[in-house]
Amino acid sequence: MKRSIEEINEKIKRGDVCVVTAEEMKEIVEELGPKGAFKEVDVVTTGTFGAMCSSGAFFNFGHSDPPIKMRRVWLNDVEAYTGIAAVDAYLGATQLSESRDDYGGAHVIEELVSGKEVELKAVGYPTDCYPRKSIVTEISLEDLNQAVMVNPRNAYQRYKAATNSSDRILRTYMGTLLPNFGNVTFAGCGEISPLNNDPEYRTIGIGTRIFLCGAKGYVIGEGTQHSPPFGTLMVKGDLKEMKAEYMKAIVMPGYGVSLCVGIGVPIPILDEEMARFTGVRDEEIFTEIIDFGVPRRDKPVVKRVSYAELKSGRVEINGEEVRVSPLSSYYMARKIMEDLKKLIENGEFLLTSPVERIPTKSTLKPMRQREIKVVRSVMTKAITVTPETSVEEVARIIIQRNVNHLPVVEDGRLVGIVTSWDVAKAVAMGKLGKVKDIMTRNVITASPDEPIDIAARKMERYNISALPVVDSKRRVLGLVTSEDLSKLLAR
Image (cartoon, rainbow, N blue to C red; front, side):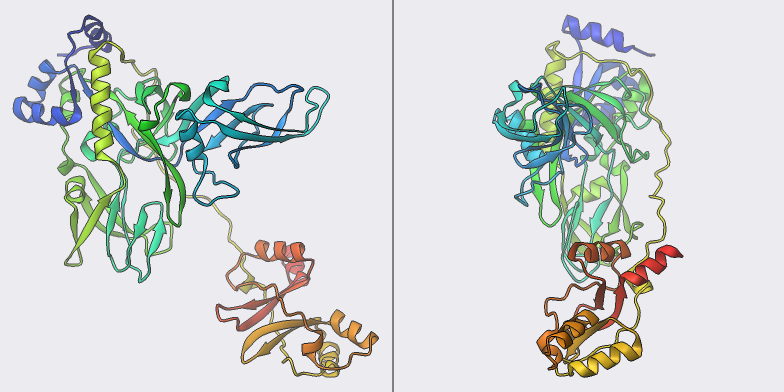
């Protein structure tokens, strides 16, 4: 027994379609079984609402008079990417304000959807066809020609939960993690999330019409980092049709800005198998708790758990009960399911057939990276002096040891630096006193594990040719010079 999306759409148009939420479908499948549920139900609505960092919007601002080709553009002091066309830009949700730590692209998008005006600042490079150099104005959503939300990675099928074995608080994209396994956080809505109700992506694919932040949107492909069963979606929709209640800009302390996005996907019950898929329970959906206390890409797995365990509010780790909190809003996900259900029942939302399937298999590869050279690998032994060392003694050291930079230490800590130039200048001016009289006190330093390109930039920025290498207590470990870096490049 099968039915088609076209048949379901005809039922929607006639007003006799049977639509239930994913939450309701679990009960129906349990009572009637997949075959009975297929006979009764035409469409199951799903929903999810949570932080989706990989979100943003394309804007077309229209041409100014005289025209400008935007080289850089800011919206409420948040920079957008302009490498597209003269007056087009893409604003990422996580882009931070240049004047505030608690404001970013997500806030700009939410404010525009809320009907507020934002400040537009742009600078350009003059050409014959775009002579204007800069512009400052205010815009609202209705002033824009196009405002299109395009989110590269949304609606995670499931997400790894997080905890922290270290002895300090960690601020992460999974929220605040308390020390010594003090808490667990998790994301995703489990059994009502879209991709968990169509795990083989039979009905969710390129061209699937979805509910996106209160407007009709579309799946335009697999999301970035798509790796089933941790699948993701790339989605788009018209920002001008969206409602602010279905999106929320948030600030995650110590991490940054993100945008909570509301997505609902209607699942057509084409056959008994789709009915079985949509009967999935949290007890059948598993993920892993990983340890953010270990600072590496492949974090150790602490425990495999089901979403039912996570939603219970407590899990056991090392024999202790640990509090669990969600980062997604079950309340908003339910609201999205209910609202989408009403739209379909009222004939305002038709279903679409995917024009192409989303891959059911994918390999998530780490970044290929070359070995990073750090300061420790190129630094040389430092010859140090004290503030009370005489200038004459420093001159002898410079000549005898063939060095140009001497860190100045007192009680084992760096307090200054003296160079051959400082000594030559002192001799020329007859200031043959002590090092403390001629040394530079505000010393630019490097740490031993700092990448060498960072050290090189410091030298260039401050117009210096050496950096003392110090530890956290400002004890001198060595010296890195521009000559050391040049030798490394030569090799």
